[in-house]
Length: 386
Image (cartoon, rainbow, N blue to C red):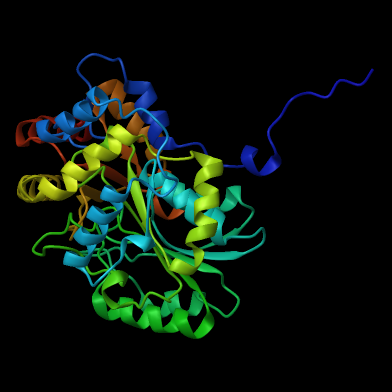
Protein backbone atom coordinates (compact mmCIF):
# COMPACT_ATOMS: atom_id res chain seq x y z
CA UNK A 1 0.00 0.00 0.00
CA UNK A 2 1.43 3.36 -1.03
CA UNK A 3 1.41 5.93 1.73
CA UNK A 4 0.50 9.48 0.71
CA UNK A 5 2.11 11.80 3.20
CA UNK A 6 0.18 14.97 4.08
CA UNK A 7 1.49 18.25 2.73
CA UNK A 8 0.27 21.71 1.78
CA UNK A 9 0.06 22.73 -1.86
CA UNK A 10 3.38 23.78 -3.37
CA UNK A 11 2.59 27.50 -3.57
CA UNK A 12 1.89 27.58 0.18
CA UNK A 13 5.07 25.64 0.95
CA UNK A 14 7.05 28.22 -1.01
CA UNK A 15 5.67 31.21 0.92
CA UNK A 16 8.17 33.02 3.10
CA UNK A 17 7.46 32.79 6.82
CA UNK A 18 7.36 36.12 8.68
CA UNK A 19 10.84 37.03 9.86
CA UNK A 20 9.31 39.62 12.17
CA UNK A 21 7.47 36.82 13.93
CA UNK A 22 10.66 34.75 13.94
CA UNK A 23 12.50 37.46 15.86
CA UNK A 24 9.54 38.14 18.15
CA UNK A 25 9.14 34.44 18.93
CA UNK A 26 12.79 34.37 19.96
CA UNK A 27 12.19 37.21 22.39
CA UNK A 28 8.66 36.82 23.72
CA UNK A 29 8.84 35.56 27.28
CA UNK A 30 12.41 36.70 27.87
CA UNK A 31 12.61 39.06 30.82
CA UNK A 32 13.47 42.69 30.10
CA UNK A 33 13.31 42.62 26.29
CA UNK A 34 12.07 45.91 24.81
CA UNK A 35 9.62 44.98 22.02
CA UNK A 36 9.76 47.39 19.07
CA UNK A 37 9.33 44.64 16.46
CA UNK A 38 5.58 44.84 15.77
CA UNK A 39 3.71 47.83 14.36
CA UNK A 40 1.65 48.62 17.42
CA UNK A 41 1.65 51.20 20.21
CA UNK A 42 2.48 50.72 23.86
CA UNK A 43 -0.86 52.28 24.84
CA UNK A 44 -4.09 50.32 25.28
CA UNK A 45 -7.24 51.10 23.33
CA UNK A 46 -9.02 54.16 24.84
CA UNK A 47 -11.64 53.44 27.49
CA UNK A 48 -14.64 54.81 25.57
CA UNK A 49 -13.95 52.39 22.71
CA UNK A 50 -13.65 49.44 25.07
CA UNK A 51 -16.85 50.55 26.81
CA UNK A 52 -18.72 50.50 23.48
CA UNK A 53 -17.73 46.87 22.96
CA UNK A 54 -18.77 46.00 26.51
CA UNK A 55 -22.13 47.64 26.00
CA UNK A 56 -22.58 45.63 22.82
CA UNK A 57 -21.85 42.42 24.71
CA UNK A 58 -24.16 43.38 27.57
CA UNK A 59 -26.90 44.04 24.98
CA UNK A 60 -26.43 40.54 23.58
CA UNK A 61 -24.80 41.61 20.31
CA UNK A 62 -23.27 38.18 19.74
CA UNK A 63 -25.10 37.08 16.58
CA UNK A 64 -24.19 37.12 12.90
CA UNK A 65 -24.37 40.49 11.18
CA UNK A 66 -24.64 41.56 7.54
CA UNK A 67 -21.71 40.44 5.35
CA UNK A 68 -20.83 44.08 4.63
CA UNK A 69 -21.07 45.17 8.26
CA UNK A 70 -23.82 46.73 10.33
CA UNK A 71 -25.41 49.77 8.61
CA UNK A 72 -24.47 52.27 11.36
CA UNK A 73 -20.78 51.42 11.01
CA UNK A 74 -20.82 51.50 7.20
CA UNK A 75 -22.53 54.90 7.38
CA UNK A 76 -20.02 56.16 9.96
CA UNK A 77 -17.07 55.05 7.81
CA UNK A 78 -18.58 56.64 4.69
CA UNK A 79 -19.20 59.91 6.55
CA UNK A 80 -15.68 59.88 8.00
CA UNK A 81 -14.06 59.26 4.61
CA UNK A 82 -16.24 61.87 2.91
CA UNK A 83 -14.90 64.42 5.38
CA UNK A 84 -11.30 63.52 4.58
CA UNK A 85 -11.56 62.95 0.84
CA UNK A 86 -14.61 63.36 -1.39
CA UNK A 87 -18.15 62.03 -1.10
CA UNK A 88 -18.20 58.24 -0.59
CA UNK A 89 -21.51 56.43 -0.06
CA UNK A 90 -21.97 53.53 2.37
CA UNK A 91 -22.93 51.29 -0.57
CA UNK A 92 -19.22 51.29 -1.50
CA UNK A 93 -18.04 50.32 2.01
CA UNK A 94 -17.53 46.78 3.33
CA UNK A 95 -16.47 46.08 6.91
CA UNK A 96 -13.88 43.31 7.33
CA UNK A 97 -12.38 41.25 10.11
CA UNK A 98 -9.04 43.13 10.10
CA UNK A 99 -7.16 45.15 7.53
CA UNK A 100 -5.15 42.13 6.43
CA UNK A 101 -8.40 40.29 5.73
CA UNK A 102 -9.43 43.28 3.60
CA UNK A 103 -6.25 42.89 1.56
CA UNK A 104 -6.82 39.16 1.05
CA UNK A 105 -10.45 39.75 0.04
CA UNK A 106 -9.39 42.39 -2.47
CA UNK A 107 -6.84 40.05 -4.01
CA UNK A 108 -9.36 37.20 -4.16
CA UNK A 109 -11.84 39.50 -5.88
CA UNK A 110 -9.64 40.56 -8.78
CA UNK A 111 -6.59 38.27 -9.16
CA UNK A 112 -6.35 35.13 -11.28
CA UNK A 113 -3.46 32.64 -11.36
CA UNK A 114 -0.73 34.00 -13.57
CA UNK A 115 -1.79 37.65 -13.26
CA UNK A 116 1.03 40.21 -13.13
CA UNK A 117 1.00 42.38 -10.00
CA UNK A 118 3.40 45.27 -9.37
CA UNK A 119 4.28 46.36 -5.81
CA UNK A 120 6.21 49.38 -4.57
CA UNK A 121 8.71 47.97 -2.06
CA UNK A 122 10.05 47.53 0.61
CA UNK A 123 6.58 46.70 1.84
CA UNK A 124 4.82 44.80 4.59
CA UNK A 125 5.47 41.14 3.61
CA UNK A 126 1.78 40.17 3.55
CA UNK A 127 1.24 42.38 0.51
CA UNK A 128 3.65 40.45 -1.67
CA UNK A 129 2.79 37.01 -0.28
CA UNK A 130 -1.00 37.35 -0.69
CA UNK A 131 -0.86 37.47 -4.53
CA UNK A 132 1.48 34.46 -4.49
CA UNK A 133 -1.10 32.45 -2.53
CA UNK A 134 -3.49 33.07 -5.44
CA UNK A 135 -0.89 32.12 -8.05
CA UNK A 136 -0.16 35.65 -9.27
CA UNK A 137 3.27 36.94 -10.27
CA UNK A 138 4.83 39.78 -8.25
CA UNK A 139 7.07 42.44 -9.83
CA UNK A 140 8.80 44.81 -7.39
CA UNK A 141 9.69 48.47 -7.85
CA UNK A 142 12.00 49.48 -4.98
CA UNK A 143 12.03 52.87 -3.31
CA UNK A 144 15.27 54.84 -3.39
CA UNK A 145 17.29 55.35 -0.19
CA UNK A 146 18.40 58.90 0.67
CA UNK A 147 17.65 61.73 3.08
CA UNK A 148 14.07 60.45 2.75
CA UNK A 149 12.79 57.41 0.92
CA UNK A 150 11.65 58.35 -2.61
CA UNK A 151 10.00 56.67 -5.59
CA UNK A 152 11.46 56.72 -9.09
CA UNK A 153 8.12 57.40 -10.77
CA UNK A 154 9.33 56.54 -14.26
CA UNK A 155 10.55 53.15 -13.02
CA UNK A 156 7.07 52.44 -11.67
CA UNK A 157 5.36 53.56 -14.90
CA UNK A 158 7.73 51.39 -16.94
CA UNK A 159 6.75 48.40 -14.78
CA UNK A 160 3.03 49.08 -15.29
CA UNK A 161 2.96 47.57 -18.75
CA UNK A 162 -0.21 46.78 -20.72
CA UNK A 163 -1.58 43.50 -19.40
CA UNK A 164 -0.54 44.21 -15.80
CA UNK A 165 -3.50 43.36 -13.59
CA UNK A 166 -2.83 45.49 -10.51
CA UNK A 167 -0.42 47.65 -8.57
CA UNK A 168 -0.08 47.54 -4.78
CA UNK A 169 0.76 50.91 -3.22
CA UNK A 170 1.10 51.34 0.54
CA UNK A 171 1.35 55.03 1.43
CA UNK A 172 2.29 56.06 4.07
CA UNK A 173 4.55 53.08 3.75
CA UNK A 174 5.45 50.32 6.15
CA UNK A 175 8.43 50.07 6.74
CA UNK A 176 9.98 53.24 5.28
CA UNK A 177 7.49 56.01 6.12
CA UNK A 178 7.48 57.11 2.45
CA UNK A 179 4.41 59.13 1.45
CA UNK A 180 3.35 59.25 -2.21
CA UNK A 181 2.82 62.86 -3.35
CA UNK A 182 -0.48 63.88 -4.94
CA UNK A 183 1.25 64.68 -8.25
CA UNK A 184 2.60 61.13 -8.52
CA UNK A 185 -0.77 59.66 -7.60
CA UNK A 186 -2.44 61.63 -10.39
CA UNK A 187 0.08 60.41 -12.98
CA UNK A 188 -0.23 56.79 -11.82
CA UNK A 189 -4.04 56.97 -11.81
CA UNK A 190 -4.16 58.31 -15.36
CA UNK A 191 -1.67 55.67 -16.53
CA UNK A 192 -3.69 52.87 -14.91
CA UNK A 193 -6.91 54.21 -16.44
CA UNK A 194 -5.36 54.02 -19.92
CA UNK A 195 -4.23 50.42 -19.45
CA UNK A 196 -7.08 49.05 -17.31
CA UNK A 197 -4.82 48.37 -14.31
CA UNK A 198 -6.31 48.07 -10.82
CA UNK A 199 -4.86 50.25 -8.06
CA UNK A 200 -4.89 48.46 -4.72
CA UNK A 201 -4.23 51.15 -2.10
CA UNK A 202 -3.24 50.10 1.41
CA UNK A 203 -4.32 53.24 3.30
CA UNK A 204 -3.93 51.92 6.85
CA UNK A 205 -1.50 54.69 7.85
CA UNK A 206 -3.24 57.59 6.08
CA UNK A 207 -3.88 59.47 9.35
CA UNK A 208 -0.32 58.91 10.59
CA UNK A 209 1.31 61.60 8.46
CA UNK A 210 3.33 64.48 9.88
CA UNK A 211 2.36 68.07 9.14
CA UNK A 212 -0.95 67.16 7.47
CA UNK A 213 -4.41 66.04 8.55
CA UNK A 214 -4.33 63.09 6.18
CA UNK A 215 -1.93 61.66 3.62
CA UNK A 216 -2.66 62.24 -0.08
CA UNK A 217 -5.01 59.48 -1.24
CA UNK A 218 -6.22 58.06 -4.51
CA UNK A 219 -9.69 58.50 -2.99
CA UNK A 220 -9.17 62.27 -3.32
CA UNK A 221 -8.76 62.23 -7.10
CA UNK A 222 -10.65 59.17 -8.35
CA UNK A 223 -14.20 58.68 -9.60
CA UNK A 224 -16.44 55.85 -8.34
CA UNK A 225 -16.01 53.89 -11.61
CA UNK A 226 -12.19 53.81 -11.41
CA UNK A 227 -10.42 50.50 -10.92
CA UNK A 228 -9.43 51.55 -7.41
CA UNK A 229 -9.87 49.64 -4.17
CA UNK A 230 -8.78 51.04 -0.81
CA UNK A 231 -8.09 48.93 2.28
CA UNK A 232 -8.03 50.48 5.74
CA UNK A 233 -8.03 49.47 9.38
CA UNK A 234 -8.91 50.65 12.87
CA UNK A 235 -5.61 49.27 14.16
CA UNK A 236 -3.18 52.15 13.85
CA UNK A 237 -4.91 55.53 14.17
CA UNK A 238 -7.27 54.44 16.98
CA UNK A 239 -4.89 52.15 18.91
CA UNK A 240 -6.95 49.03 18.11
CA UNK A 241 -4.42 46.50 16.80
CA UNK A 242 -5.87 43.52 18.65
CA UNK A 243 -9.49 44.18 17.67
CA UNK A 244 -9.04 42.99 14.06
CA UNK A 245 -11.43 45.38 12.38
CA UNK A 246 -11.00 46.99 8.97
CA UNK A 247 -12.84 48.11 5.87
CA UNK A 248 -12.76 48.24 2.07
CA UNK A 249 -13.87 50.99 -0.30
CA UNK A 250 -14.54 49.56 -3.77
CA UNK A 251 -16.46 50.33 -6.96
CA UNK A 252 -20.14 49.51 -6.50
CA UNK A 253 -19.99 47.19 -9.53
CA UNK A 254 -17.89 44.60 -7.64
CA UNK A 255 -19.58 44.83 -4.24
CA UNK A 256 -21.89 41.86 -4.82
CA UNK A 257 -18.94 39.61 -5.66
CA UNK A 258 -16.96 40.98 -2.75
CA UNK A 259 -19.89 40.10 -0.48
CA UNK A 260 -19.70 36.47 -1.61
CA UNK A 261 -16.04 36.32 -0.64
CA UNK A 262 -16.69 37.87 2.77
CA UNK A 263 -19.29 35.15 3.34
CA UNK A 264 -16.89 32.39 2.35
CA UNK A 265 -13.98 33.79 4.41
CA UNK A 266 -15.39 35.10 7.71
CA UNK A 267 -19.12 35.70 7.07
CA UNK A 268 -18.98 38.96 9.06
CA UNK A 269 -17.09 40.91 11.67
CA UNK A 270 -18.38 40.47 15.26
CA UNK A 271 -21.21 42.87 16.06
CA UNK A 272 -19.90 44.06 19.42
CA UNK A 273 -16.51 44.86 17.85
CA UNK A 274 -18.26 46.86 15.14
CA UNK A 275 -19.92 48.87 17.91
CA UNK A 276 -16.44 49.74 19.15
CA UNK A 277 -15.59 50.81 15.59
CA UNK A 278 -18.51 53.25 15.56
CA UNK A 279 -17.30 54.82 18.81
CA UNK A 280 -13.76 55.14 17.43
CA UNK A 281 -14.89 56.78 14.19
CA UNK A 282 -17.43 59.14 15.72
CA UNK A 283 -15.53 60.16 18.86
CA UNK A 284 -11.92 59.40 18.03
CA UNK A 285 -10.55 62.67 16.61
CA UNK A 286 -8.94 63.48 19.94
CA UNK A 287 -7.25 60.06 19.96
CA UNK A 288 -5.86 60.61 16.46
CA UNK A 289 -4.50 64.04 17.43
CA UNK A 290 -2.95 62.66 20.62
CA UNK A 291 -1.38 59.78 18.72
CA UNK A 292 0.09 62.03 16.03
CA UNK A 293 1.58 64.44 18.56
CA UNK A 294 3.08 61.58 20.52
CA UNK A 295 4.48 59.83 17.45
CA UNK A 296 5.96 63.00 15.99
CA UNK A 297 7.87 63.65 19.22
CA UNK A 298 8.99 60.02 19.24
CA UNK A 299 10.05 60.16 15.58
CA UNK A 300 12.06 63.35 16.04
CA UNK A 301 13.78 62.04 19.16
CA UNK A 302 14.72 58.65 17.74
CA UNK A 303 15.73 60.09 14.35
CA UNK A 304 18.28 62.35 16.00
CA UNK A 305 19.42 59.68 18.44
CA UNK A 306 20.07 57.04 15.77
CA UNK A 307 21.72 59.38 13.29
CA UNK A 308 24.22 60.34 15.97
CA UNK A 309 25.43 56.73 16.17
CA UNK A 310 28.42 55.78 13.98
CA UNK A 311 27.51 53.31 11.24
CA UNK A 312 23.80 54.14 11.17
CA UNK A 313 22.04 56.19 8.50
CA UNK A 314 18.37 57.03 9.05
CA UNK A 315 16.08 58.72 6.50
CA UNK A 316 13.43 60.90 8.11
CA UNK A 317 9.97 59.30 7.59
CA UNK A 318 7.12 61.53 6.45
CA UNK A 319 4.45 59.17 7.77
CA UNK A 320 3.62 55.87 9.52
CA UNK A 321 5.31 54.84 12.78
CA UNK A 322 8.69 53.43 11.82
CA UNK A 323 12.31 54.33 11.24
CA UNK A 324 13.87 52.12 8.57
CA UNK A 325 17.59 52.67 8.96
CA UNK A 326 20.75 51.28 7.40
CA UNK A 327 23.40 49.59 9.53
CA UNK A 328 26.77 49.70 7.77
CA UNK A 329 28.32 46.35 6.99
CA UNK A 330 25.24 44.28 7.85
CA UNK A 331 24.26 41.70 5.25
CA UNK A 332 22.16 39.43 7.50
CA UNK A 333 19.73 41.54 9.46
CA UNK A 334 17.72 38.52 10.61
CA UNK A 335 20.78 37.26 12.45
CA UNK A 336 21.53 40.79 13.68
CA UNK A 337 18.04 41.20 15.15
CA UNK A 338 18.18 37.80 16.85
CA UNK A 339 21.50 38.79 18.41
CA UNK A 340 20.03 42.10 19.55
CA UNK A 341 17.29 40.17 21.35
CA UNK A 342 19.71 37.75 23.01
CA UNK A 343 22.60 40.09 23.77
CA UNK A 344 20.99 43.52 24.19
CA UNK A 345 17.37 42.83 25.15
CA UNK A 346 16.24 44.88 22.15
CA UNK A 347 13.49 43.72 19.78
CA UNK A 348 13.63 45.20 16.27
CA UNK A 349 12.43 43.92 12.88
CA UNK A 350 14.96 42.78 10.25
CA UNK A 351 14.90 44.62 6.95
CA UNK A 352 15.02 41.32 5.10
CA UNK A 353 11.50 40.64 6.38
CA UNK A 354 10.33 43.22 3.83
CA UNK A 355 12.01 41.58 0.87
CA UNK A 356 15.59 41.30 -0.44
CA UNK A 357 15.60 45.04 -1.11
CA UNK A 358 15.25 45.58 2.65
CA UNK A 359 18.40 43.66 3.52
CA UNK A 360 20.95 45.80 5.33
CA UNK A 361 18.20 47.84 7.03
CA UNK A 362 16.37 47.49 10.33
CA UNK A 363 12.86 48.68 11.24
CA UNK A 364 12.14 50.29 14.60
CA UNK A 365 8.51 50.98 15.56
CA UNK A 366 8.66 54.23 17.53
CA UNK A 367 5.06 54.13 18.85
CA UNK A 368 6.36 54.21 22.42
CA UNK A 369 7.26 56.56 25.23
CA UNK A 370 10.47 58.59 25.00
CA UNK A 371 11.83 56.78 28.08
CA UNK A 372 11.49 53.40 26.38
CA UNK A 373 13.00 54.73 23.16
CA UNK A 374 15.98 56.17 25.02
CA UNK A 375 16.55 52.89 26.84
CA UNK A 376 16.38 51.01 23.56
CA UNK A 377 18.73 53.46 21.84
CA UNK A 378 21.24 53.11 24.67
CA UNK A 379 21.13 49.33 24.34
CA UNK A 380 21.67 49.54 20.57
CA UNK A 381 24.54 51.99 21.01
CA UNK A 382 26.33 49.72 23.51
CA UNK A 383 25.78 46.69 21.27
CA UNK A 384 27.29 48.45 18.25
CA UNK A 385 30.25 49.65 20.29
CA UNK A 386 31.03 46.03 21.17
